[in-house]
Amino acid sequence: MANHFDVAVIGAGAAGMMCAGVAGQRGKKVVLIDHATKLAEKIRISGGGRCNFTNIDAGPQNFLSQNPHFCKSALSRYTPQDFLSLIKRYRIGFHEKHKGQLFCDNSAEDIIDLLKAECDAGHVTWRTPCKVAAIGKTGDAFRIDTDAEELVVDHVVIATGGLSIPKIGATDFAYRVAKQFGLKLVETRPGLVPLTFDADTWQAFVQLAGVALPVDIETGEKKSRQHFREDLLFTHRGLSGPAVLQISSFWAPGTAIRLDLMPEIDVAEELIRSKNAIKKNLGNHLAQWLPARLVQEWLPANDFKADARVADLPDKQLRRLGESFNRWSIVPTGSEGYRKAEVTCGGIDTKALSQQTMMANAVPGLYFIGEAVDVTGWLGGYNFQWAWASGMAAGLSV
Image 1 (tube, rainbow, N blue to C red):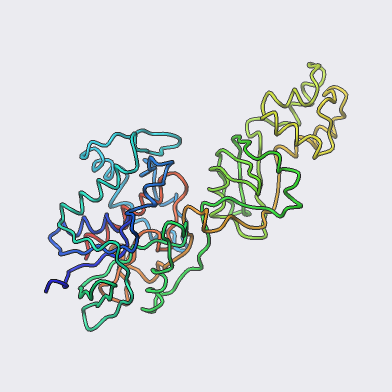
Image 2 (tube, rainbow, N blue to C red; image 1 turned 120 degrees about the vertical axis):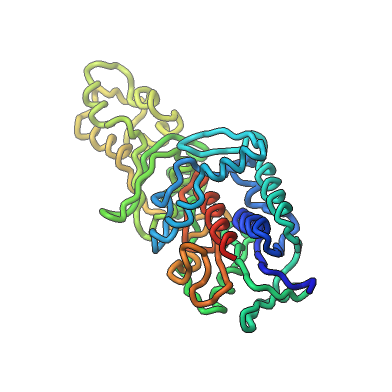
């Protein structure tokens, strides 16, 4: 039958194409379905257009999930080195940036071309753009109604991602399918997303939009505490940059984030120690470590004058100023939401899935991979590594 396939992969993003190529090269008859007119847009825009395709240090410790052990199997069986071998086979130039992050030398299109070539090597049939209207199961077979035809398949892999960046095609399709077949969901929320503040709270910092600096950032208490050292970026509505994107996946609404704007220096101790050794005013002294615009706005907001001489200020005041830099605590009121979120936290409850195969335990033949699943990586290539690893796990199983 022309419309009968061994495997239907729904979603032609990173995880979906990986899975389809692997299954096809195993001799399976595979159809890959996607509703978008432009293929793999999330890959295309990632990493500033150069795709941060993995992180050489990726491991289970870099992922957030209600079941933190779930990702171990797939990640251990398909590692960053395995994907690098694939990259090298296609002679794609790459380089390492900050903290193990690997990027294409040329363009994210190189990764898309690689995945398309892997699918072609597996004789994958493409159905794009093609919308899925319904999925049903009769006996051991699934029936997929699309706007082009009805397909009969033995295995269905859902790789349609989460809710992040709807303008490039994100939908709740995976969650609807999961609910249809009785699978539980972990509540979703935007992850790797800028944080925002109410207008009154943020008024004092609006003029700092565009200022960036390295910081320590943390949130949570005791066992739940998360900490990163990354760059912070002030925006007109709040805070962004890698530091905030990282912490946003762990931040709980109504709680504070805590920042050290000079993580290498105890500001109070440095100011007190240097009181009798320097003749600089406070603004000029601090500007040797911090962006001048930040100092200019920060001092009056904390009741200090930039032209005050450090030597004239009491130790108590210098300690208060130092505290404001080294232990700045502020409560966000929200985030920029899914429209700016790089990923979706939460998703298909991993308790419903096999960690070896990604198949739903209660629905033989139905698989969920990639961002649709409650496994969310840190910023820096980790989420792509989960896409490759989970796609490989399902592709070897279907």
